[in-house]
Amino acid sequence: MSNKVVILGAGISGLSCAYFLKKKGFDVCILEKEKTVGGVIQTYTEKGYICENGPNTVILGKPELRSLIADLGLTEQMIFPSAAAKNRYILRHKKLLKIPSKPNDFFSTRSLSIFGKIRILFEPFIAPLPNGADQTVAEFTTRRFGKEVYKNFINPFVAGIYAGDAATLSTRYGFKLLYELEQTHKSIIKGFLAIAKERKEKKQTQSIFSFPEGMRQLTISLEKELKNNIYCHSTVSAITYSENEYCISYTQNGEEKNIKTQKVISTIPAYALAESIQTLCLITSEKLKQLEYVPIVSLHLGYKKEQVKNTARGFGVLAPAHENTPLLGILFNSRIFKHVAPEGKELFTLMIGGARLPLLTKLPDEDLLRLATSEFEKIMNVKGSPDFIHFARWKKAIPQYTMEYGEINAAIENFEQTHQGFYIAGSCTHGISVPDCVENAWLTAQKILI
Ligand SMILES: Cc1cc2nc3c(=O)[nH]c(=O)nc-3n(C[C@H](O)[C@H](O)[C@H](O)COP(=O)(O)OP(=O)(O)OC[C@H]3O[C@@H](n4cnc5c(N)ncnc54)[C@H](O)[C@@H]3O)c2cc1C
Image 1 (cartoon, helix red, strand yellow):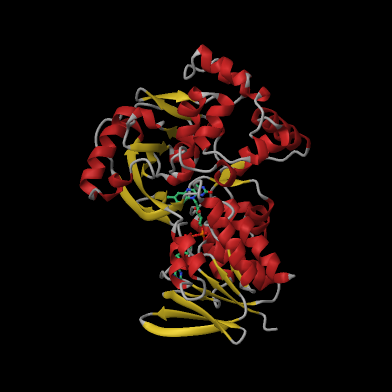
Image 2: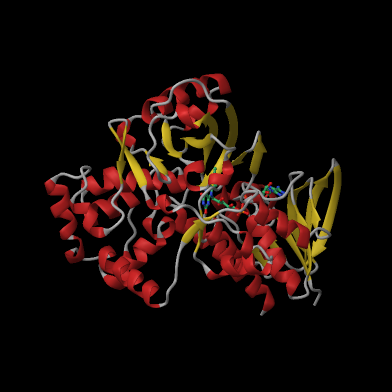
């Protein structure tokens, strides 16, 4: 059997999958629609500011990401945040309120009433739902911790991770750890305490990180290792199967081409794969189309330090839906990674849109800037205009693992079983975070290796 593998998409999923397979001697070929690699990992630099248009907060915890970074010789270059990064805030009446970072802090926080605090104490005694039933994240966390914890902490947290709506996302698929802790420990609190104990015993640490040139350093390093294997400007349009082979049709710089292979790994978004496999499997195609992607705008703003009067140190602030603000949250980029702003300046990223306010992402730059900066200025007590502005617009940013995701997942699994040699990875399966994507890429590569 041929050792050729065609990989669709050169985001972190496609690149890492190709890297793992190339190291094992496979002949990999990556087809990428855009002129550059990295997918949503895109770092933009201007005037000494280093802006992450996509992921800012990548956690170094999963072993696959750790060893990928080590293998690429990037470990020494990693930059870890200042201790202040552990301070995270939620917005309350347009002011920053520190999120409790230790269990005991929940009892002194001003964001919960006495009743809300007492309600947390009942969590360990609440039985899991029978038969492992799934619930939305809103239902699940309200059932376990009460309404106040949901409204003030979980709702903004979900907006921060998925730009999503906790009232529609599935706990089982979108927040697997919470779901599993309920099943295994019968309590989220007990489960987290057990995890913390285990990490302490094994001296395992988890931290976010960056690189001197931003997150793109990861994808650029992968690109260097794979430079003869990547075909940019190559848009996959259709995949068919005949005589024991998949035939992938794609357009490269306007020219129609095709490539035949017995092994395909798709890491392109679900909606793009759905279009390509219409003839191969209409049922899976239709299911994949149901996976919704929400739009996001990341608005980067640079200011002179003295302009920003609120000097709260920390990672950033997330906004609960009931605060009625146009912002999902604000990242205090240069307060945790000094290198991302020039001397004497500060960089902030405002996250806008998501499932909560998708229409805002359609506003023209000028209107959105006015709306977002006026809110930002109130929250952070800012005087004067920014000296740097950069918009990153994502029309289809993050897939939403809603309550229907179980059926989509089943369709993906069924497709893989009935289409030998065709694998579906990427952020549309097994998690959206960068570490999840790398882990999934590694697991997919293992399926090819056996
Ligand atoms: C704004 C934003 C902020 C985020 N923040 C974080 C964060 O802080 N921490 C974190 O861990 N995660 C974060 N994420 C999520 C994470 O970055 C992504 O889920 C992950 O990078 C997805 O990688 P991927 O390779 O699976 O998909 P993508 O990066 O989407 O790559 C898919 C690739 O396929 C290509 N493609 C599409 N159609 C075709 C076609 N027809 N033919 C060929 N190629 C095609 C695309 O051009 C793209 O390069 C964020 C995502 C966004 C959008």
